[in-house]
Length: 546
Ligand code: CA
Image 1 (spheres, rainbow, N blue to C red):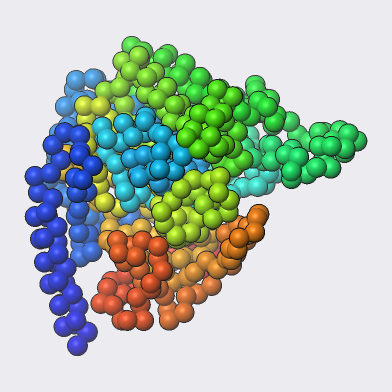
Image 2 (tube, rainbow, N blue to C red; image 1 turned 135 degrees about the horizontal axis):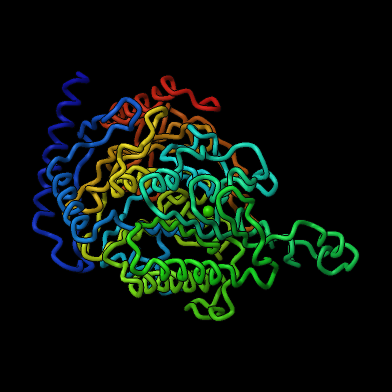
């Protein structure tokens, strides 16, 4: 009976796949009109293949992989080296903030630079981060989910002063350096403040940035938070003995040293400082033959929002967060212009994303997501992030894709573009999938079949195609008082009835769980979850899976 039901479901899905392919055939000529259907490719019934036993299985797509390899080889011949990679990592920016994602002026801030790069490149509609800063940043640097590295939640002030960091021999920066890249980190790190964990000691040739979350530096100084520490001179003097925060700078082997003290005023200039530094670096590459990896992680738009004085009141909303979005969009434009001046634009993949969803339900002055939940949760609002891949002359303009992309994929994808796919570690499980053919082939589709949801060491669920299966739930309460309870302060509990199944294309707010209706899809998702969890038996994580 079950077999018949599954067969019926498969036949139905096959019919849906044929229909979807028919609908999108012939699309994608030049910049996309706004009503161009997204590239669709049904991965529900796909059977991914593990290239090696320590790799996340990936869907094999011979035609697009051949097309991408030929394109990469042609440009390698033309330019004589592997491409530059510029990764722009925004902080707490919402999936929907940019105009091209339905935000822009609709939510208070125009984003012409991000919109342009998206429309002249590939816009990912289903890209995923982890629920918070440190875990996502660790996945990008390691190609591994946080449960495999122990980087499970944001490091708090002082916590990053010792203990665990990423494996310095296995970071994306280290692997690219070994492949001949100049590696540069500019901006927020949040993967450990101690010397051995600092970027310049885990694979970057140079670091200029802030080692932890910017609000750690200034939040306590806000008079509305701590009036006693600001208005009482004796207490103010006592509190001011605390560590002075700063932009720090360092080269390999060194402890990064303060170069730009951050106080309640100068914090407004941090993103300008970071951009100036990155622009000078890019300009210095003009005429150079060595490819570079620039990891550019902004201070904004993490709360609290401190727009540069030149940007105060420049957003439609004339409000702090939106002013910061206008500024960050401008900073991205500055990086793009610097690449153009340096003659590097056709030689560089620019990838723009955010490290997690916004604090959308905590306070109005945060990013915008149309999805349920916020930063800290595995609801889509917490982990669905913008993803823009732009590469002039190489990525076809006007592409929009519904394919799954996990930010862990940046690891294997970058190494593949660098011609260094063989440098992906073989001594640990790697969750990253090489998505270079997805990005480069004109009609490229995602090679990722499943996205896994984790909150700390709790396995929360899995997504395949449009279906999301949650075995655990975040439980937190919101009311209309403020400050509201952060999702981080909620609890995680097992879902009733063994799990919740959502169709994310129909039920975008994850409000109508279907599992009690015994959907035919459920066994497929459960099997994917079981297969994923089995990897932790073969490769034991540093902390037990909950
Ligand atoms: Ca963040």
